[in-house]
Length: 389
Image 1: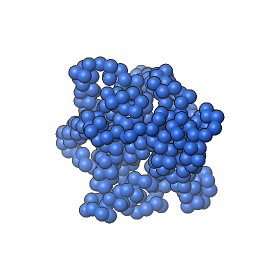
Image 2: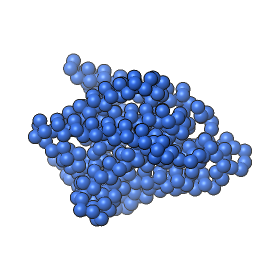
Image 3: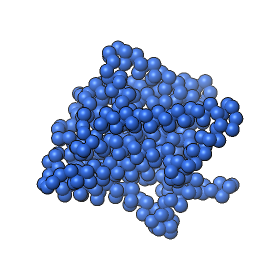
Image 4: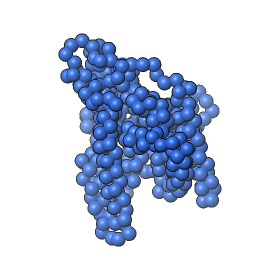
């Protein structure tokens, strides 16, 4: 285990494809099962699984950015303005680039980017878990991430897989003392989703802890101070650059992006709106069951985080997971999206992965297989119903 006061572990060569292969093959199998279940379920409803994955909800907004650029908006009857400026640019940039060099449409390019990014995310998650707890825990962490109930989002033309890949590899770079790489990946993560702030926070807190913990000279990973300081400067450039550009474009100044989010009735209120949403569930008996479920879900998240602290996970993982969780739960709108918004918080899964890694291989495989089937069925049902808003 790594002590919280230790900023990073000594650098070592990154995980090879051969070392990560079991995790990646298992991940691909789980995702394939989810896609098969979606195809079968969609066929019974005369729905197109391709459209569900690439041309509904946020994926449609991303492809519009790729095709039309920024400036598209929808004005709702209640006066709300949904602007595509709310969507960060890296995914649509990649969709446009892939479409420019291939016959793929923007939507299909988004699916390709998401597929590649999901495998990169799985590899990054394995790299982090393998570095801290060993390869068996790494495989289990990847598979637990794959079988999450909302895991089907990893196969959609959404930005969660791309962001998780950048975040995981940035955290791995911090853990192995590759500070400039960590800063660059954090900047790219900041161009992907607003929650890129969590990666920046992990880099900043870890770097500051290393400055405080050392007397002079290089840190325990051998990285000179200037590299850590430069990583701190680079990490927020992606998010800050886009937010400032939006402010200039809208005339709202540095806080202009917040005005854009307000048009979607989204913002950060410390969890007050979510608490009211849960409380409203107890106004009638059927909905009260959902309220109880939400309370249990939040309680389980808190318990998982406490378990992460007790396991003495490395500081950057704790900061990142905590920041992602807080940002997801304290957003003031789109409560149905919260499970999806928590998808990048993979360090929360390490306690579960370690428990599975402690079982016999046959037993852990049986548990993961059963959960994978349930997750595939739920994902198919979910996308053919309300879906991820």
